[in-house]
Image (tube, rainbow, N blue to C red; front, side):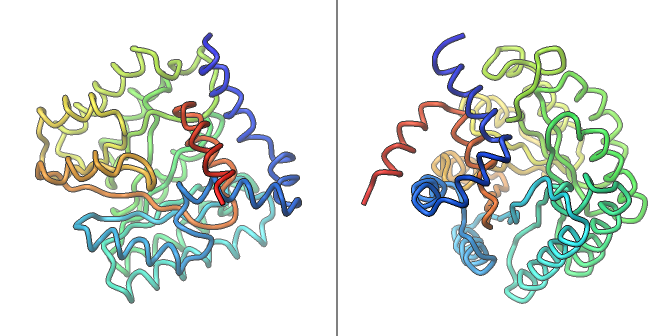
Length: 308
């Protein structure tokens, strides 16, 4: 394992260290330095800031997705209150007429407290977004939560057609999951997967087998006619996938702060494109994972943290 690979693995472990996250949050100096790094990848601390960023993205001819960060909420009352933040976000998006969807971690709204609470809160948000004509996208989390996420998504699909779900190409199980998801409504978002996972259940990050799995699954989605979001920053993959075309029900999605030029290139080629914007105070896990995806970003983080 190279030094860069070790650095990435360490960052993913740190991302899951809730105690470290709390210590940094409690220390004004450390929190200030960490926020300087986070600002590159985060659309703001408030919904208003994220909505303004989405409006700018729309003005550039691109769709947006907004995600209010806060995974692994372990308090039922708080999870329900956080659901109402998403509900209000949907209302504000509709009032501003934004071309924007909502994305969320089910663990943010109660699924790790109780799966029925998570389903109830997700149903509340699905009702609101359906009325507003907005897509609702469920994010993927660690592999220990995959079954719970897919169970919740399937229950929602019994009532709604606008609720999508994310799958990770890294996981060996994803081919089987895709076969079932193609029979359900809702957009399928394909990502490589950023969580720390054992090789017994997942392809190693950066391995040719992961690239091959992602390409095969993306090609399947593009050829299926099913609504899908191809979420990657891999320029070589994007070049190959562009040659495959698509049904017109596909889009390419990238994260705020990364490779805006690639997104513009795909838009210029006639594809619908989307930029993913996160906001809130719970940005620790998200930012650590973004840096871990390319450990060379550690150097950029050092520059950002020490810039006046």
